[in-house]
Amino acid sequence: MNYKFLTFQRSVSLKKFLSKKLPNNKSVFRYNFHKNNNDKDQLMMIWQRKNYFYPPKKFLDTSKTYVLLSGRLNLYILNPKGKIIKLHRLDKSNQICKIKKNVYHLDVAKSKIAIHCEITNHSFNDRKMKFLSKKNFLKIKKFILKSK
Picture 1 (spheres, rainbow, N blue to C red):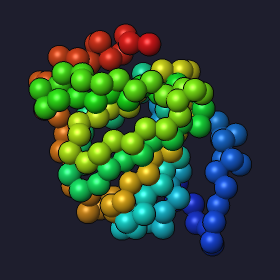
Picture 2 (cartoon, rainbow, N blue to C red; picture 1 turned 135 degrees about the vertical axis):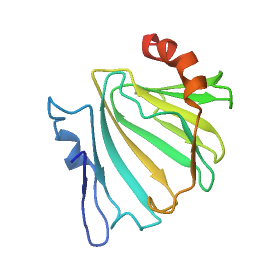
Picture 3 (cartoon, rainbow, N blue to C red; picture 1 turned 180 degrees about the vertical axis):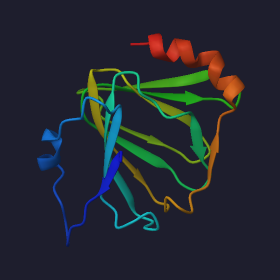
Picture 4 (cartoon, one colour; picture 1 turned 45 degrees about the vertical axis):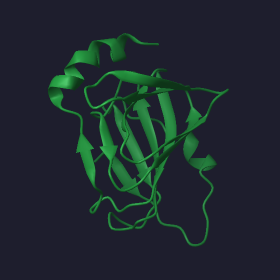
């Protein structure tokens, strides 16, 4: 399993979870700080190995906020044909980025391990998401993996 739900009463500090180590056999792991997949208040703390990514997508129903906690993370903003129109490099000097709904995006870890939080306002089960076509993604995949 690449995720774990964590329950808490009124509040939670994420600091104590930063010491979590990503198992050698995994490229990604996440703690979910929401009740379940139906909860509309989604907060995930995610560990990613270098160059790990999930295919480019856009949310049709919500924005997404990224907060970098450790390492380096590149956020690529893409047009519908897969052309990179903006690159946000998250690091110690630039730790937060918000992406509006209906914007294709992709996050790629650029340090050995990157730890970040993702915040959305939709349930996982009811989210409205559209992936970039595979053809358009393959045009830029090599560039994204070589990028620093």
